[in-house]
Structure formats: C-alpha cells, structure tokens
Length: 148
Length: 429
Image (tube, rainbow over all chains, first blue to last red):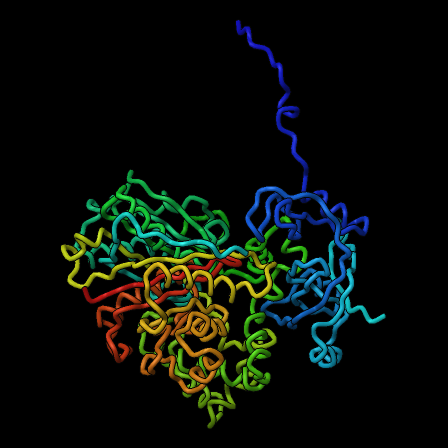
C-alpha cells in the first residue's frame, strides 16, 4: 500500500494565462490586445509570450487603438482567394497594415473594389480603422479605410 | 525579426556523392505511371542514389524521409517506417520530416547535420510526394484518385498559423503577389510590364524543361501557341489560353502539381572520392522562417538566409555560377535571384525579359524548368533541384548543360508559409 499523498494540485503547481483565448475574446468586446516587451518596449502583435523584436523573454499586456495605415495591397484571384470572405460576398484586398503603435501585419481590408483601388494606390500610405467582424463562432480584426 | 545568427563551421565537411530522381508526372492521369506508390517512388530514387554512390543498402546507416503532406496525400503520418523496406533499410534509424514545399532543401540540411556531427558516415536523404492524387478510400496504396480542390484548398490553410494568422491577414491572400507587387512599385513597373516579365521568364524556363526528360511540362510555348492558332507566342501568353490566376500570375507562372521522388547520399568530404569521382560539397545552409502574417516575408527571409550562408562561406553572389529558386510562385525566381545579389538590384526583370536566366543565358537558373515547368511535387521539389544542381555541377546535363561548368551553386528553398533555406554547393575539388 502506497503511503504517498497529493500535497500540491497540478493546477496550483502550473496555471498560466491563456493568451490566444484572451486575444479573441477581446475582439468580441472591441478590444485589441497586444503585448509589450518589458525590456525594449516594442509591441508584440498579435500577442505572444516573448519579444520578437529584441528577443527578450518577458512581455506584458497592453491594448492597441486598432488604427493604422495601409502601406500596400493586392487583389486576390482563384489561386489565392480567401474562401471565407468570398463565401460572404465581401469586397476586400489583402495588404500590409502598420498599426499606430508600431507593429505591421498582413491584413484584410474591406470595402475596396477595383475602382477605389486605382484612386487610393497613389495615396498610400492611407489611414485605416479597425473592423471587428463577426465570423459566427469568433470575431476577427479586419480594417477599412478611415475616410471620415 | 532578429538577424543576429552567425553560422559556425560544421564539425566536419559533408559532400553529396550520389543522387537519384524519378521524373515528375501526373500519377492519376498518366497511364505509364498510374498505380505507383509512395514506397516504390521513394525506393526507386533511393536505390538510384545508392547506385550513383556505389553503395548497397546495407552500407547506408540512416535515412530521412521528406514529404509535405503525407497524411492527406498518402494516408499516413510516419512514412519513413512505411518506405524503409523498399530499399533494404528495415530496422535502421530514420525520421520523417515535413516543412511544406521547403522539405527537400531541409532534407539536405538535416542529412548534412547527421554526418557533420560524427554520428553517421553514410546517410540517405530522400523526398517523395504524390501531389496529384490521394488515397481512393481505405484501399491499398496503388489505388488512388484525383486530388480535388474541395480537399486541397481547405487543407492548404493548415500551413498558416492557427492561433492568429490564418484568421487575421496571414492566410492565402498575400502569399502569391506581395513581393512582385512590392517590386513593381519599387521599380516603377506597370502591370503590363510585369506581365511581360513573367511571361518571358516562364517561356525561357519552359525551354529548359523541354530539354529535361524528367520535367512534367515540356512542350515549348511556341508549339502551344501555334496549336491554339497564334502566330505570335507573346499574344498567346497574354491570351485567355494563359489565364490570370491572381492579380499578377498567369497559369504559366503557377506551379504544375506533380508526383515524384528524389534522393541523395551524403558522406564526410574526407572520404567522398571513394564513392564518387565528382563529389559536391555542401558548404553551408542559412535559414530563416517567417509566418505568413509578416509583411514581405519572402523577401525578408530570403535576404536573411542568404546573408548567413554568404557570411559563413566568405563567398558572394558573384561567385555563384548557377542558382535554383523554388518558384511555385513564378515571380519568386528572378525576385529571389535579385535579392541574393545574383542579378543587379532593380534589373532582374530585364534579365528575365531577355532570356538571360535560361540554361544558355549568362545568368542561368532553374535549369530543370523550375516549378512552373519541371513540376511541383511539393516536398520532393527541393530534392529534385538538388539532383539537377549536382547533375549540372558534374557536367552531366546533356543538352541543357550550362555554358560554364559550375563550381558554386546556390539553392533558395521556400515553403510551408514559409520556411526559407539558402544552401551553397561546391564542385571541382
């Protein structure tokens, strides 16, 4: 008969935060979560444990405005269409968005058709604002031109 | 991204002493090849590589099996143990690896590490992929059916970061045209000029493939144009016979999915001449990996991987006699060649237009035709490029042999959204 007893519950021994879950739940509430490097201050977006700008191990939570500038974009074709957007009959382009706080990501920009694209191509970089888009089971972050 | 990696020299130099490759083909439609299985294909390539090195299966100590998607395309997740018996390596150590379309290049890198470490002296690295088909239900492997877009396209998403990227902007949208779009604006090229550049590049890579018996698409574009009623091949290339598949890429600049396998044998350079009179030394491999959410990832990762290997070897792009670029995105070919310095900054597109990248040009690359003509058997494509590089470096490429016997060859691997490798090979020692 064993004499050992559980003195420490596993969930008390190791219980870390759920980063991805917090990010997506934030978008449902219209909040753009990111992390900030505790050493160099760079914004890590989307949020991860460590800093990919300077390679430091620790980051802390912050929030972003969600606004930024569109720096370049492309249209998609049959080879590279985003099926989940085509299914919704959305007009969109894919492009590089640099957020006001610094990080840049490949992003989806809604509401741009071929005619509008010709106009804005020469105006790049151009201001964009966040669109918290309901995909059904989750809310994601797209962008649209900030024309106000 | 951080760019502070400084490559060290391996514990001992490693050389390629044997290569083998099947053709790239459509295993669902081509009756000559229909019914061949993963184990058979890998086995034929492996045994050809062993024969080329003058070794028997009993002499090989360890092997790598590379495949981009063994689960969907072959209904297995541990292909290494399922193929070992085909080439007499039952019971020996092996590993399966899968890095998307970069798998073949990484297969060489890993095999080099295995020998450079001192653990093994004779290692086989092979890659096999049957990209045109998939298992026809729960049946023996020779029973395959066409891979449908309904299966392929949703599955392709699995190469993108599932935590964030594929649901934000890191999915397929930017993958194909981001770099050529960036380059066009940087260099003031119109959409029509870009079209012209890509059509010419595809035309000349097809010339390479016409002379390459292992290529899947060999018919010259001139012949295709005539058959379609065009006197001017460039009119044909701009016509609906060659439709746009994305903003910039036509069918001629899109990869042609294929089945196929390739393999190589690596040994310590100090004993390489015992196996082959013309060994090819692997001088080094630079590596950079960026997920598809990172803007301009292909340009950045290519530059970083090339920086590492050039710094470590002390060589420059001017030393390179031949370049291979995994160009399943057709525009990648001249863009990557320019990024690493093989072509002058801002002028790579002119070299493509003028046909200078073909086997008979002064800046040859992708002498097997590349992914758009040689074909794209996903994980096996990189190893097929290594096969062609070694063939050229030995002077055994026949009609498509480049003018100057290459001493140095540069290979830019790319794939899996996206892994990048930059490897330099040396011959003539």
